[in-house]
Image (cartoon, rainbow, N blue to C red):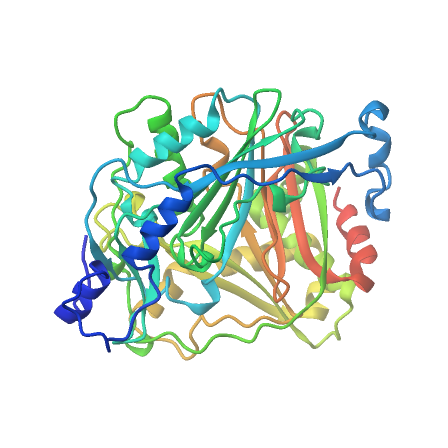
Length: 496
């Protein structure tokens, strides 16, 4: 693992902040001091009790879900579900780990990635799940010790870096007063708010944006549990975050160490000559998009694939079909002018393109993707049949190796990583191949994984799967304004 070079004084100050040998006029970096950490641990020596938060059961929903209330057991409509956070604290590595400053790649440092990815993971069984997972995480943090670090902006060069001192991620233990069956295994629309299932850290302890990772394990009366995760995108992409969870699961199941030996190697990611420093942050408009989900059966997706094959003689993936459906439905619903340019963007993994650079790409858990942006006119997208839209998406995907190679050597006019957020642009994230569905802590794989839409400044669609035991594709969107929502849902239903 390669640590960055910096002045001896600054390195000593960062790694040994309590030392009196550093002049008092030195600029302090925003990483907790030793005294502050000691104080935090003293506060955390006894469990932090949180009062139960009463959450009324959902009995009336938006018009788009008006049939759901009939599915609720009448006896349970009077119940009040509550979640109580019992204890919380930092989980330190089980053994001593290196104390160092680690650099980030040019992709990690993109300002548009400085946000927390939110998700919940539902498991039907898990005896003493919080205790087991917490202990396994502590052991996994030995090889994955950067997950225990803290982000800071280096005052010498202004770059975002990671300070590794072994503080650990934030971990919350909680209990619910109901069974998972009572809340339909948190199928959408959720009967317990995500805010009660995701970890919260007191701001006087730590700035959440400085932590790579936070977790909450909520145990239910049935013996099942829900894991709520916050993962900073600047630290790891979806594949990388899932890799760490697999490591925790392997140790929880009794393995002495994770199967994959992780590597940092952020300095091996290409740093094009034109991109010595990331550009200014993009504009973040408030699009005020509405949230909705639509499920497609496996047969519906198969029909789209068969239609494409009959039209072109080629195969397409579920991802290709899903992107084409949501993109065309969105553009038709909004009603852009025919000559107006519209875009769809998705992040494609480039690990397979860096086998000559990364010793073992499968061990790398940093951001390793290229933004594939597809642009056409609204008129073309509206008038085309679905097979043609699938072909447009596939053509853009096929150009990934060439475009990424050009970017790596600085052969580009506009930086593809400098994203533009506007109502004309749709961003799509594929959660079906990241590995979260395969994580096992010893009691089986999750029956439901729910990623949440990102922020109001982007029109977003997330491709996932329907809860077990059903089969199919779930497309979760926050991509159209209220006045376009009904038309968008009608357009999406045409593909079912």
